[in-house]
Amino acid sequence: MRRLTYILFSIILLVFGFSCINNKTNVNQLVGNEGNALKGTGVVGTYEGKLPCADCTTISTVLSLDNNKNYLMRYMYVGKSEEVFEHKGKWQLDNDILSLENIDYNFRISNNQLQQLDLSGKEIKGDLAEKYVLLKIK
Image (tube, rainbow, N blue to C red; front, side, top):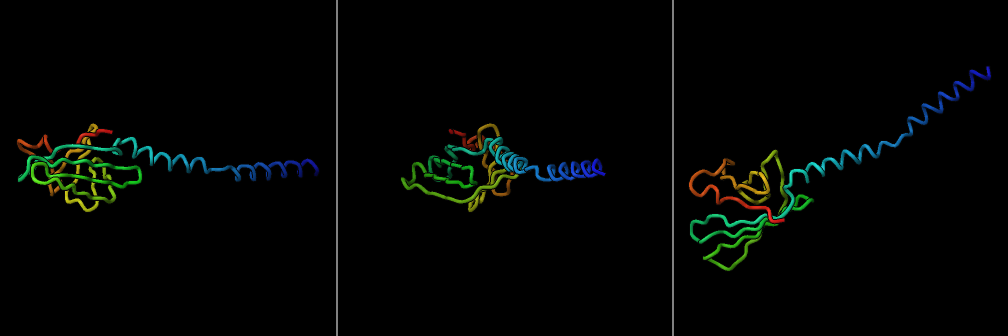
């Protein structure tokens, strides 16, 4: 009888011991992987470029994306005005398409650059197509 009590007590201790295992590290790894996936895309950073302009020389543009999914876009119409315009908001990533809150057009993400898409979300074609690019500077 004493032996049976000892075996039952051992089984209860094992079950209790396994139920107390801390799975918090697994949860932290999952949450960490989500952040790493975002960083892995290389989208977070600062981009710069001189976009084409119909009634000015170029649109000098700087776009900063942070880890908290906030963006800051500053641009100036070179040859037309010295005024610097600014947009702030949240950014969102869907596959390789970057969307900016309060901005009508999106960008396609590729090797350390953002390619501006037209208003319908399609790639810009034509002679000036390669000029609709912001290069990652940091």
